[in-house]
Image (tube, rainbow, N blue to C red; front, side):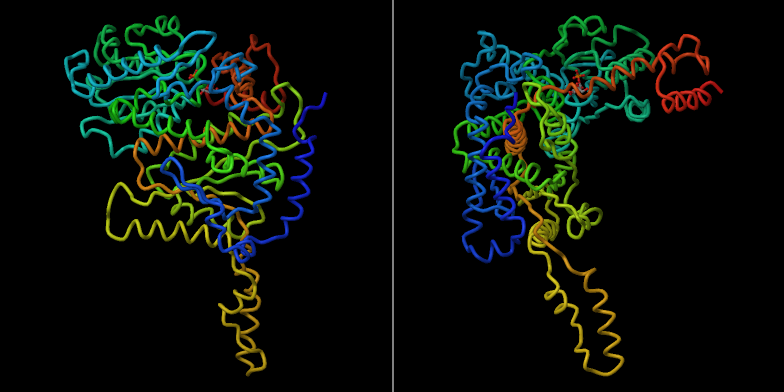
Length: 562
Ligand code: F6P
């Protein structure tokens, strides 16, 4: 069997085309086409995408669209939107689009309408969040809630934490949000020291309600609350859960009436639109959360209907495939010039790498092309003073996304001008670089036919020349919006979700499972009893690991047990 996309004619055509483009500098592409910006930019859903600073031509785009057609992208989009089981290894639909289906059109899973349940949970979230925000919901001792703590990890943490942080401007002054995810007791411990148990509400968020880190943190938080308030009955007023597993929530001791449900057709990293978004709703209010959903819905419609050459996620997905598969680019950097998006790169790490970090196709065939790029990044101006050196003068090709807000949430004189000029300067400099002639002119290297001291100066400057040259030709996308609002944020997140889907279809992989996280969890399960036992060399420790792991275990145990 060989159904790999890399064995198609279009793949080979793209390979040949890459060779013809590999030596061409983007500054020449710009020099030969005064309309390049107009040709390679799209405005849709209140976003402008400028992709002209990429190593591509009209022909590249045509070929990449042919690749998408060969991979049956349009069919796969329809299958996902219609609730088919596109997550084939878990036999599940991937219907995050239903969670923000503001048109409320019919969507079926296994012949059953999902919208009534979606709307019911949204209504429950509204009612609950309003009672917390208004002070109607009282803690065990009768005080209103002042702090909410989301306990979750992965998709049950990163999305809600990123959005809650990004929309800080929408938080009410009397509420604060905390996110506890790490199993290291420091995370919970440091958070609890800031909290008053009488006015704290914990949201335990776990799709499966089996995740070790989350249950550990939830149990310890529960014990802390009981110790502080002196009564187990207090739990009902201070703990709610978000999960697909009612039985497990009940067993944990949370009243099912305080549980917000979602469904197995919502993937963890696609779940912030579901009840997993509860901390967001409490912090920004349901009306604003609905704006977030509307923004995503608008992008969903665009993705479903816009022609490929005007389709934001399709273009961004194809460009990413172009670099990963044909230029062997191994990473992509996310550079928000909007400080509210400081957690966006971390959120995207899970979205992209848990979705695309795969080595086999949907059918289980090993791929013979690189798939997922490594995602990293940080807010723009900070990154400039940290890792941009690598982008400008390193040896790697690193495609970047510049995400730029025209207006900030805070208007200090001169600040936004500094942000915007730096953002644009960087995309320009990465594209243009500075060639040896330009650098020489800039260094004002004197004419060597002059006196001895001038010759020495000239030699010193000439030695510096290679260090001061910038190759340029580093590709970037620029995404611009007016100001970060819940709606724009929803659009932006959905854009990246669908970009990932486009990549997955081109590579023929299932982006909705994550078997790769299983092995580590399983091995941790075998190590746990050994770590818990008192003996350095535990007689019951029957599972033998490699000598390195055994050595490390014994070293740790020697310290732990004195
Ligand atoms: O281990 C990875 C993972 O399964 C993620 O996919 C998921 O987002 C995270 O763990 C948390 O899972 P849960 O919501 O079931 O606690």
